[in-house]
Length: 341
Image (cartoon, rainbow, N blue to C red):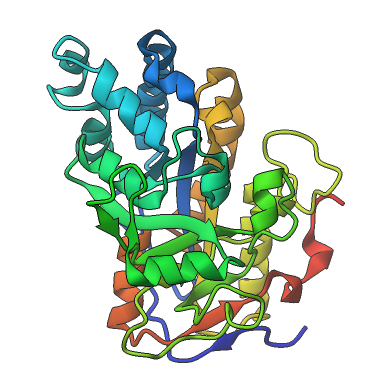
């Protein structure tokens, strides 16, 4: 097949695996691993919150032991539960700090805002992203400027650019600097088919069909998008009638195959996010599928074909190397490598 990327500029070749540096002559796939905790009023009930907190701490240790830099994307309710339900006794388990701060300090977690469907329509507390960011700042000094969003919602683009003011905390204003995991407005209703599946790094000029894949060079542009890939077409946790890949590892291996064959423009930025839902993080019986994916991916990390990274580190490298747009649309990949239909 032909070259399917729009790409400007070049990418130096670099790979790291655990504590080992491996210089290789390959085009790396930059993979971020993230988990999200949805809106749920129950997290303000300390009896409900406590066992979920224990599962999260155990899951964090698992990710750390696998060498994974992990992103926790959490809701207003979860951050509120941490603030209301943790005290000196519970924090003896986390070195005297909140569990969120402990995840950052001990396990190389990054902490992002998350709202179910990326819309206030589903928020149980009438909050928005600015409120969620405020709530996170009450319990950690490491709240990121990264968020999910609705890629086809022009009003959200304008709010983010201007600095969104909180609904519950109108004195707080927040603008994200990095976007990931763009969903469509249909996502709120349980329809994930129109969620953004493109990969790469660029600055969208707007949140609509025409503008999202246009790189914005204006001096006022401030939100870099890191493409998260075709998560809606990957089954991972349960069988799916709309499956293209049974596991995230299948897709990463297929993408690596296309790199090896020379299908993709040399020097392009290849990005993907492996999203892990709360139902998996809070269920140790589901962790076998997580570790299976990570172990298969880690074999590619060891060979230099995959780099596990946080968004901030990747965007900093992108800016250092010229900040030129690189965009790969999922439909332009070789569909003969799919592992389920």
